[in-house]
Image 1: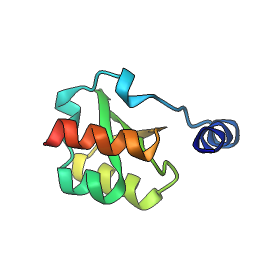
Image 2: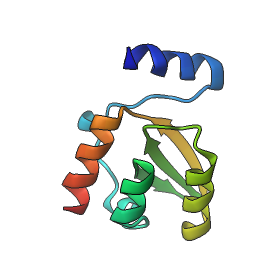
Image 3: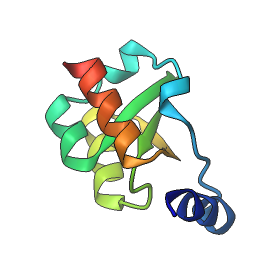
Amino acid sequence: MENDLANDLIKKYGIPQISLPDFVLDLEAVKMVTKELAMKYVLIPVNKGGKMLIVAMAEPKDKKAIEHVEFITNLTVEVVQSNKKDVMEAIEKHYG
């Protein structure tokens, strides 16, 4: 069911999906967002390049979350979708 939703998001909005357990996160990117913010919006930064921060989110169309991260980091956020369980596990792993 969750994979069907992810596939629909890719088709409709062009939002790519990543498998967080198979992805090595950029620790400098992770540090740009607090654990509290990551938990609030169920998101985790995965990589930073120039003025762009790539963020994995369970709800990739959450504009409020995206705008909040852009405001606190002063970077443009590019969103990728991941399932909620994987995002929460990545938050616990990287923030403790």
